[in-house]
Image 1 (cartoon, rainbow, N blue to C red):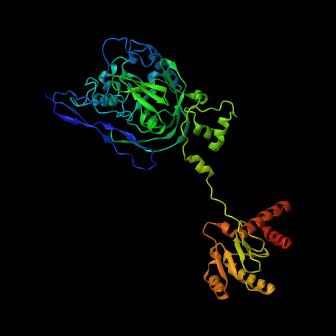
Image 2 (image 1 turned 45 degrees about the vertical axis):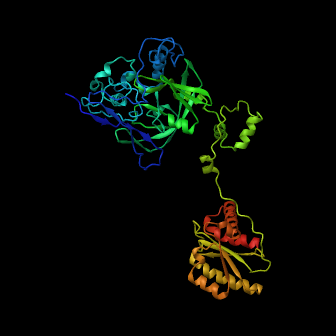
Image 3 (image 1 turned 90 degrees about the vertical axis):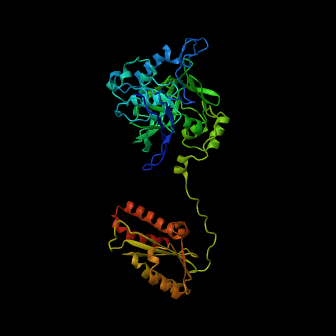
Amino acid sequence: MASQSRTHAPYAWDTTSTRFGASPTRLRASTSTTTPSGSHTPSPHSLGPISGPKDASIACSFCGRVGHMPRRCRKRKHARKRAQEHSRLPGTSKSNVKGPLGHLSGIGAALPAVKTPPTPPGDVSTGSGSPGSDIPLRASALGAYSSPSSSPSSSSSPSSPLQLDADFFWLADTGATSHMTPHRHWFKSYSPHRIPIRLADNSTVYSAGVGSVVFQPVVNGKETRAVEFTRVLHVPDLRSNLLSCLYLARHKGFNITISSHSIDFKLQGRTLFTATIHSNNSAELDGSTVTSETAFSVSTLPVDLSLWHCRFIHHNYADVKSMISKDLVSGLKLESNLSPDSICEPCLAGKMHSLPFPSSLNHNRSPLELVHSDLHGPLPVASHSGYKYWITFIDDATRFRAVYLLKAKSEAFEAFKVYKSWAETQLGVKLRALQDDKGGEYMSKAFISFTELAGIERRHSTRNRPQQNGLAERANRTMGERITAMLSESRLPPSFWGECISSMVHVLE
């Protein structure tokens, strides 16, 4: 029966680091066609399987020797076996891994571990389609999560790229916007972080955390300096580990070169790690993940000014540069000349503060030209007479203070009238201006009406700016501190604070 022409739209998944609750990013769809004969039209940019006799011009990107491909490299197989032994959780064995895990491309690497329905005949190939087509990649990615009985090809050779244990290796992915792994025990540093991630099957999963993972590269058959992948998302529902090429290129300054058999990841002209491209167009990083306490003994990479800034507890960049240039600290060197970030978020969170208010240079020379006032309370314990507040009046010229104890804030107006009458009688002059913090006790209709009829100018501090009424605010703070000291020395209960403040004002004035 001839198959009908149909157009497949394999999804390219994407993730976006949005806040919790934000909607996931939309899917991007690319199209490829299937001819009526059932053969797939290869994509012009896809990488097909490599076949043919051995050639001395062919070099293995893993061990550096000529004459064989990376997928046939014995050293690489040995390294893979060793990585599986070190990367597997304690108490687990290879027989505990559920199902044959395959190397996944960008369209299937984020699929959750769910059983997929059987593939309709003539719809997608199980690996025997056109080498350059996107359809076999999609089929192999979906099959990676099927049970062994549902995948007829699962009994193929273990050395086949489709049957490699992708659970323990990193896949270079050009469609991912973030690094991802399902392995919690791989993380060197970790913090909870939940964001939505849209998958190829149009479903949504969520990350559980974010942190850094240490990776030990193997370049030309030799282990090189370990690297640390930062901002790696922990996504428990994934079955593969994804390394975002876009993130490395756009945010870390990497130059990524893709050839027919391998991918080189270079930073400032130096190859830090590589990936081998398999016949199913998936790219697996050469090396293994460093786990357990070993991860804490390796240096991060790149060692740039931003890293030393963090290690020196967010010390300023100028001093860090000076220590490096003058060789003041042994071992303090830069291996990268990348410019530091212009904005350091931890510095903003920990160091940001408002500028101090300048001290006032204007002081009145005549008594009662300006009086500062502030109310303090309620205190947690009432005095023996039932007082829970005190209100302070300070003359700007003489700095003489008068304090009145109150049982309620509403008594502030009566206290002001008593102070005004006493001060004007003693000094023989009229009170001209009153400075306060615009609290409710100063803004009652009776208070405002009284000051208007008396011709008293009202001055208020700006909202949430107590510094503008600093004279009275600081006086109340000083009195509170001294009252606490007096009670502590005399071992009297807190209810004696009224007697303490009366004694203190008497001594000071």
